[in-house]
Image 1: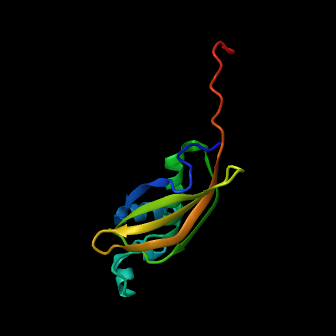
Image 2: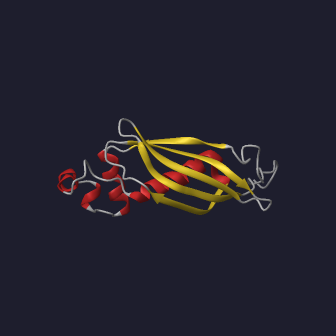
Image 3: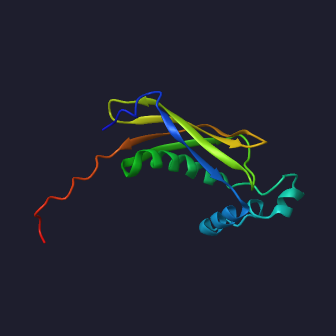
Length: 148
C-alpha cells in the first residue's frame, strides 16, 4: 500500500501559489464568502492592514492539494489540521512544504506541513499543520476481450 516515497523523512514536493487580488475575488465568488476583508483594499487599509487578507481556508485547501498532487488520485485524506501564524495578503506568494513523519503498519501515513510567505516580507503563515492519509489501491486495468 505504501511506496518507497512514503518513508519517514521523505520530503513532500513543495507547492507554490501566488495571490493576486483577482484570484482572491474568484475564490470569494466560488465560495460565496464576500467579506470585504478579502477583496476591498480600502476596507483592509482602514483597519491597519496593508492589503486584503487571503481567506484562511484557501491555505488549508493548498495543504490538501499539495498532498494530492504528490500522491495522485489514490491519496485519501483522513485528517487535516492547521494553525494560522500570520496573515497572507493580496499580492503575496506562498510555498507549502512538508515531510512524512510516520508510516503505520495499517497504511496510515502522517505528514507534517507548513505554509511560508516568500518574498521581501517572508514569514511563516501556517505552522503546526499536517495530515494523515491512506492510499487506495489503483483500479484493476480493463481486461482485453471484454464485453463489446
